[in-house]
Length: 363
Image 1 (cartoon, rainbow, N blue to C red):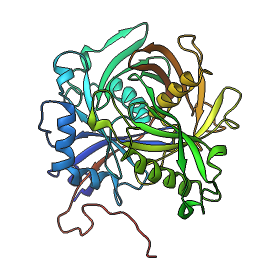
Image 2 (cartoon, helix red, strand yellow):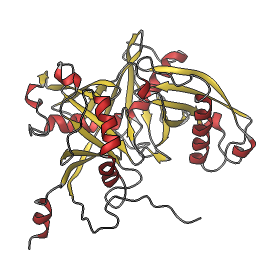
Image 3 (cartoon, rainbow, N blue to C red):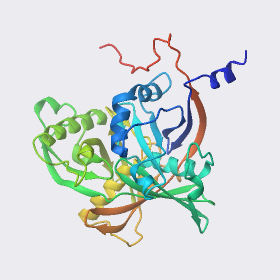
């Protein structure tokens, strides 16, 4: 028996295209995911969480995935594809659940959706416009429409984000004695900014972390969430579904070159972004504009590095503020994505680990 082809021909096979952006994976589901009920993309997102979360767990968690896996569920029809404002929809997912925006996955999707000509995967592919050797497409993400430009003669993808803004600047967080083991300070000043998702932004110098920076970031996340339960520090102007803290980005302007900085993003229960976090770049550019050291509309680019991209040419992201609107700053981001493979996943009913697992060591 040809086992390989036999597995491919099974019912309920889920097929994916595997990519990475600066080392951060994107598992793009191209077939096998069931239809999502709902009129709007946010309704379909809720339906996915309530009725098909087992599929997310199977694909993101071990043994098929890992704690750092990231996924993209293509949604061929949304309210914005129907009215002509978008070409395709997407839901982003990870080991812990679903996110509202993802820059590294947007870059990967831009390249993949232009490369594919499978109309089952992307029904509106042939309607995309190519001008001056650059193909434009519009992805409807839970946070809004992301406009992507994919040049035919270069592997650098750019996307224009939704308006980004600072939700709370200069928030003073009191550090209780119970958290002083990892943050040896009485208080830490942080900023909260939105780039399709809400982030706490704090410099490593301000954090003053002693030992494990991940523990310090987790402590800040807990403390900010406690404040958010009492104060409106995480506030979206139109969508309550987006009002949650997605991650903590610890920044360091002493690394990343003369016009750049290092950032480490912790999200989804401690997952570390291998990329410079594209939606985080939107938030950080908005903060830079608010602070006055980044201009708007001046073609002024700032470099953003991760622990993986630092020191490796072309792996980092670049961000620039192109327009200021009433609802926020419009930011453009540049980055690159690469293919790493294609997969077909099956689920045997007798497999005790068929639904995936999280490895927790005994204490």
